[in-house]
Image (cartoon, rainbow, N blue to C red; front, side, top):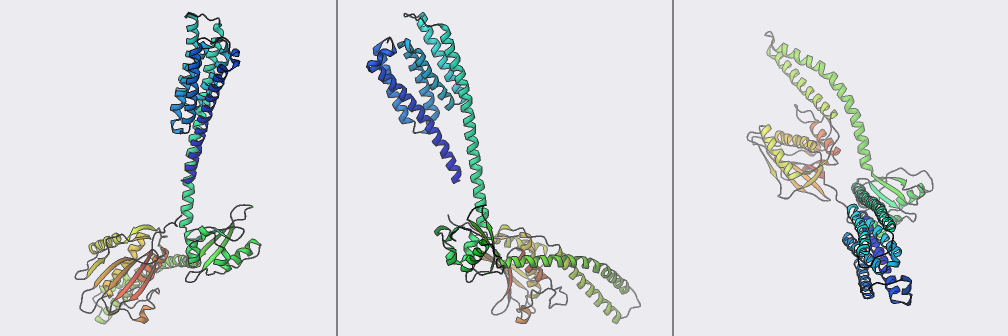
Length: 538
């Protein structure tokens, strides 16, 4: 909101200047009046009625003008100071019209300007009231002269012209002031909207997973978002604040940027900006037309490759889905024919055993088809902020209610503090269902019930971990190396697609699924989930 506060500050500064110049003009009026009355040039004012009153009123007005000039530094008192000043101006001007009858036109012109400025600064109704007060004061002073002890010789037409002039100028000044205030409110609203858009844009840029750098003509980093600082390594963490030199942080990236600026065909091979960092694919663009600032986008090469792999799997999934639909029709016919043959009384035991094998294989093939269709129908991930502790407890409760685990046990190991993560809850539900179901089926010792634990805890680099642990015989190394291959299974009733689909769902959420051997027996499947990104400190 820095820009919004700046615009509001400008509006307050403008109001303070208006009030200051109005008070300065009043001080000038009081000074000129005091100077004329106290100097040898007092004859130009004509006959002075009540000289002592004139002197006292002049001193009062001069002191009042100086006080208003000092108070004009507080713009929050704009309306009050303007209203009080206008009322005093009208009262003093009306008194001087009676004291100096030959200077009526000059005093009226000075008062006309005061009333106009007051109408500009005050709300419309208050400004119109000030205008009516000035007109009434002029008319009242005229009636006092007509019916008072000292009869004046001013024509009534002059008073009418003064009153009409005050009303017209006050109305026009009020309309101008109302329009100016409306424009100020609109500018303040637009300033707040612009400030909000700037904050939104900054938030989006900082939280982008693609690294973004702004490089000036001297190859110094003017701006770097969080992802770019992480990709640049330790030297890039202070790049934004210190204006680091790009060739010192990454000579290869600076070389490619120079080639792009010179119009050469750039090298499109991925590069590694810092040790222990993933490879990136740099892209370059000019910030503004005619500007020497350049934008550098650092795309994670692994993400690009995963996108290509995802497109390939999507195409393969569509093809597999169409093929699966074609397989299910004859498969259903075979299964139905087997059921009819099993009802025949002429079948011997050997033939019935063959029919049972055919029926089992039909069910297994149908399971494979269902898994392929589920993979083909997989929707794009929609990550959300999820508390893994709460999610794990709810998952276990729902699993116990929907699945009969009998003597087996399933429990959650989680702390009291929240473990935030960014993942699609539906995909996480599918992954944990596959892992827990496998642990209950295969993670048990002979003759003993299965004991499965779901452990949630925070990891390094703002990532969260979910472990599915069993106390079974474990998985041999030869089998563990092929666990996530499609259609690989050690069970005659399995399809070999459960772990493969679970890993693909994790990849779609920028998460990982891996097998970890447990010393002393048992298995552990670990899901590493990315945590919500945080903004860099300003």
